[in-house]
Image 1 (spheres, one colour):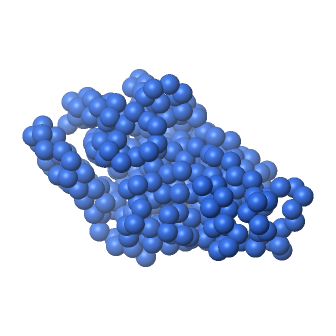
Image 2 (image 1 turned 135 degrees about the vertical axis):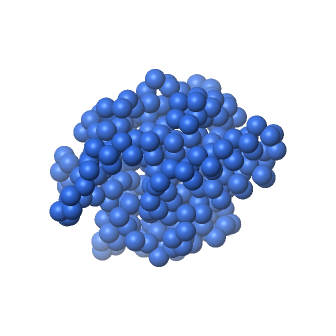
Image 3 (image 1 turned 180 degrees about the vertical axis):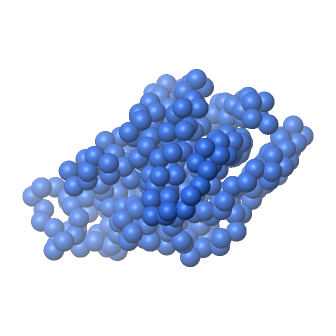
Length: 330
């Protein structure tokens, strides 16, 4: 398999020599994709300004053969051009080649670090300010939930919850923006190349779920991710710590950092306190959608994914968290 990957690199995208001179390392690609770091040995010279290392991403089963591949490739290229993501070197039917950026892996417990949390919020605000050449209607969230639930789930409890979820969120004002939809520690690089200031050390990556969506989903989903560690090395290969859900004070720090970035070029007087309170409600209600969506997603992954992970355990965990959150914020 690694040899065929080398052939893709050599023949289609880079002027690298024979793939026998390519070193391939298996990286952690998350719960949807497979990721490989491909490098040239030190004794092999590069052609002009071509990279010595690239990341090879092989899409998971859900994305293979669907139109979202084209949209994600366009999105990836635009974000790279605007310095909001890694460079794109090439696309092929089962994946793509990306720029490798030396980085330190972010851990779940670092999401609560005040400086890191503030920078994530800043990066998210910039992401939300993007204008992308895609359908601006927020179809992704409820469309995905409907597809997952009616294709695989028929139990009335889940259908009733889905309907409740839609009604509650419909009553929760949230602007439609270009959302990442999966801001968790595995999708945030901590850059270490020395070219970035201490205030610009993070980069959002992995845009396979990005789309126009309700802003509250990015907030609520990110807050949920504070609770889940996907690097646990024993079955089910994740660890849930519900008490790590951000406190009100931690949420306010995130929200204030986000608003500071959004409003930095405006002089319009606003009621900051009311905006913050509204955003807390918005985020925590949309956390319901996060639990529900990834619970359904995990059931589907359990059927088709080849990645070793306790998908059904994780689905149950997210549904349990959904009902707990529902009692608190309905």
